[in-house]
Length: 563
Image 1 (tube, helix red, strand yellow):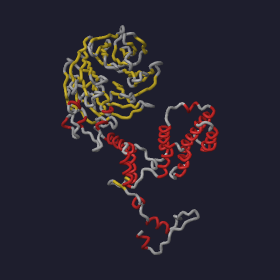
Image 2 (spheres, helix red, strand yellow):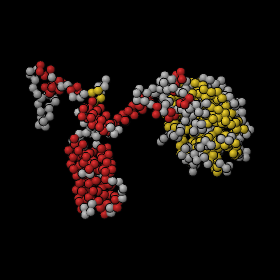
Image 3 (tube, one colour):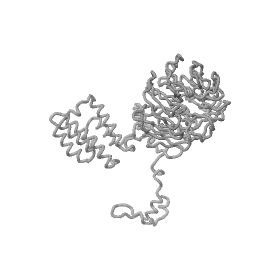
Image 4 (tube, one colour):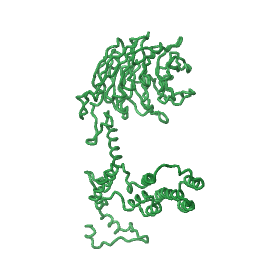
């Protein structure tokens, strides 16, 4: 304005026949340049960055108060701030809809200037449909209902399938009368649908504040490299940030009962047990006690050769153990007794897995084929010879596919029924092992080139992350998902360390020292997200947990939390 007053020769910009300024004239340009920005002149903001409009901020808070049933407080906020949540037109529209006054609702809707043509048509259709049904429910008002349909609903030119349904109800009204919902709750549901059609600037969603806060927490959680805490432990009082102290990084126990190399280990689905297998021809069931201490429960004796792998039944009541080129044994996990021995003449087993219902056992065999058995020992089916011994097999949680390593660099997902290939994962290097995520949407693949690849199995399979740093030259090294929402990848390594990466970014987080031989396998407790186990050629199993000295943010891993 100072510039305008300083130049007495200023004349207002001319307008054309439409009443709009002719913005190509020099005086008009000077006029526009002299005007303060809208945000400077009209919009009051809150916050240090000046990006939060005060009116929007107050309206969102008011909506949140109403959603929390703090109605009196919300009314007082509107009165004191002089910022109404709803415009007078919207307030009237809400009342008319709740009262079932459909004719007046349509008239009020037409007075709201912020609506575009498409939104106005959709909202009008919703209201007029109720007007139509109101007449149809009344005796001797079929003609009025027909007039609403012909003269008000059809001219909108939308949702023709619904129009045909409404027309059919005039002839056969049974389709809409079978409802126990009272008029008040029905009108309330209509209002909710109507408000969803309106633009947010007019009708703020009642949970808008919650959505904003949840999005912020989600962004902070996603940006936290060490995030390993349940959502129930998140707080609004501080910006979320985890420290290394929330990851298993400290040796809590060393289990030394096996007398030779430990090749495999796996936590039960409920996290209460740990099973391990060894070159010493035995498997051991360990119990995870309250407070996180792991204690010996049973030593399973019976195999004549080294035990390659173990597999927990879906309900954790039984355990399979697979001897190297030998038999598969099924054990009662509570009693430690052998329930059945699965064997086939002139053929040994090298891998095993359960079906999701616990009724079928999948076995990979030394003749490069694999078979299905029922729990009682009857062979149900057998797939022909492949070009590689199936050292790794599994059945998807849905029970519809069988996965196995074929031809060295390929993982095939076969249909359970017709044995056809449903998905194919092909690597450039030889695959040594793999594991599925808990939701079966991702596959973790260990390769001979000292890389681990994460595949997204949804749609067309593709690599979404690569993990490097561990060493592998001679042995089968296994990795696993783990932590809160399986946000981490852990792996053994031939350099005697356990490696942990951030799953999404692929960044290495830590390398854990402690073993004196190659670490063959790791398993992350699926329930206690702070517990990790590792098996090594040094004959020991190490249980890893959080290091309280690294807990920068006061989580406090007391025994009850560590459980």
